[in-house]
Amino acid sequence: MADFYQILGVSRDADADTLKRAYRKLARQYHPDVNKEPGAEDKFKEIGKAYEALADPETRARYDQFGEAGLGGAAGMPDMGDMGGFADLFETFFNGFGGQNPQGGRTQRRGPQQGDDLRYDLNVDFKDAIFGQQREIKIPHLETCEVCRGIGAKPGTGPKTCSTCGGSGQVRRATRTPFGNFTQVAECPSCNGAGQIIVDPCVSCGGNGVKQVRKKLRINIPAGVDTGTKLRVSGEGNVGLKGGPPGDLYVFIKVKNDSKLKRDGVTIYSEIAVSYLQAILGDTVKITTVDGSVNLKIPSGTQPNTTLSLENKGVPRLGNPVARGNHEVLVKVKLPTRVTDEERKLLEGLASQYSDKNIDSNSGLFSRLFGKESK
Image 1 (tube, one colour):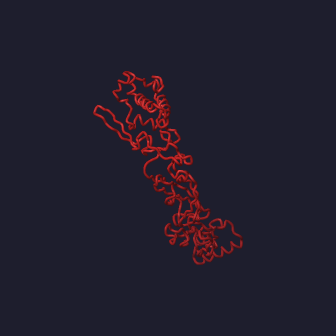
Image 2 (tube, helix red, strand yellow):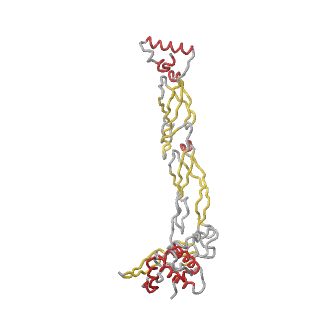
């Protein structure tokens, strides 16, 4: 009987990595779907049998001591169905065929498959997020290959029945144990359960049946969106396979900041600075809102850090643009650090009037406006 080490072309002290590399090389060379020479399939089975015995340390130890007789038939060529040592042939050492399956072609899964969902991050200006807009975006996504019409095979050719599983998509292996024989069923590692492979892939898509393209989309951004809002565009994700439905596109919104206006939910916040005379006497000033410049009435006697509210000048509620929040304006009063002699006389006269009314000038308007610096 042939020596397993000679079959794999390695020395008897070869480590696991050396065994695996030798196995990869020979399995590629003699696989029936790659090598059509007479005897290639028998050689391929012989290689699998040798690696099955030597890949497991315990089995290898028995082989080294007693030869093939010490294996008790356990190292026989599996029924193409174990996901243990034999599956390693397909899942490990054929890794790197550029996405191809172990039989040299592309796998083709059975049944419709839904396409993947996609994410797109979109930056939106402050006011555009408040009032909404339409935006044109370009997204990279997968579409059905026009050359092969999604089959994945070169025009004029088609998928081929997988020789490993016979087209069933499953492989079986009988395992002998002290408690009897057991059969394991698993997805075929050659075709990934498809039952078919594509030996002659489409040049345009590389056998995938789909190609990545950049598509223009015009999306509607509703009024009231904010950072973190997620918009779903149905059917604009990756194309589905085998007639499966496409995935969806999810647009994640990020709203840019504004230098003058702040937002919290549906409420807009801003600040305005007025003079002490405007605060005392009252005035009408122009302020910036999301609707543009509007007039704001400063009531007479307005105290510093007073908040004035503009109703319905805030952000529309998402899904109900008719209902809007408010715009809250924080009033800052500017107090002078110096006054002219004329201003001092006028203010002292005002303070004396408060004094004549039995109001302590030190606690009256004069002191509240200027404090000790103005004495």
